[in-house]
Length: 468
Image 1 (cartoon, rainbow, N blue to C red):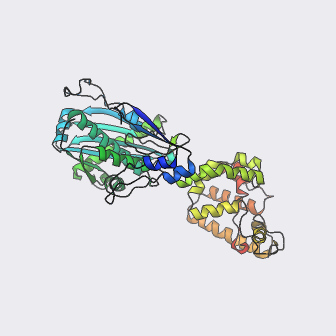
Image 2: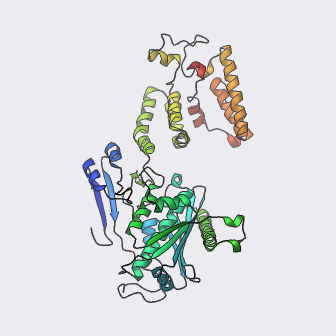
Image 3: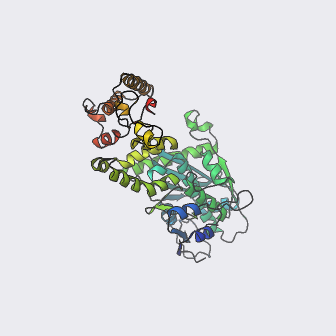
């Protein structure tokens, strides 16, 4: 398909081509290849699909003895190659400690070990990996990397996966440099303290593009398929130093703590440098990738794709119909509201959206739906829409409102909500029922609700069941 160092761009223009070119398998499952089920989404949401396949030759390594004559272009004293920057973005090679030739011999003899761990805090992830022999003294290769991807992609699970991918690629590179013509597959044991990462990476489980961290899991599986190594995955319990003395830990547990310390150290360095987001390029072994607005996604999220397609049209409709005023629409923090909505179950998301625009079981819509002949409120006789429901002044409606707000206040106490935040929320609700009274008059400046959210929240009213 081409020589190393070339980059090929394949543009898929029709669903037929999508079906044809997406037949590469990730990992054999149930006796046959596992295909990427991307055709449906390409057909519905994309007029074309760009698939970029990289063939890159990995070069340069720090050496302590001459390389085999098959690689005369290598020089002594160079660091690990730029495959880190090309493939994983945040890869950083610290150094080779000791004699690399000893590690190559350990690889050939089946004694090489790979251990990795990650660190995650405030949507910033790092991982640290080391290649070493159990009885190999201080000889080792150490790699540190910042986990690529958007802040919302980050998780402890992703940091474990990037460590595994870095270790697999480093071992495969070491094998190709020292023993390019080796016919056997040396055995290498690889370990981390993320059990789910180990299972998804190495076990023969079905994999879908909608699965969490699909880009990394699929890249790891493809790297394993391409590798000339017999991998032996192992789970190691982490953070055992909290309940045990260091000398009481096993060899693997001690190495895990070392990697945890390096990952934490690197994360703190990135925080100090304000390097909080790592690029998320297409991985070296990533067969299929989804880009939205030139940003690679960690997985195929149908809800996110639907938002990209429908939300602009929905907001335009709200403006045209006067559902939300132009002043409010321009001041609403849509990204913040989007994150809040996505944290809710799908059914509650639809329910909240319908109530936001007044599409609920009040008199107005019951007449439109043919369920009632009058839109009058059954309690007070006034016209009943979604704004009337929480503002009805009938005696029974007032009793019901007071009961529900008292129950909500008690629930906030159970959730250990801060007093100032609780006051802000309850005053906001009071402003919904009595819009002529400012809901912000006594709120502490530290929790003062921005006006743009107040404008939006006055249109988001949940109707008591008595009005449904």
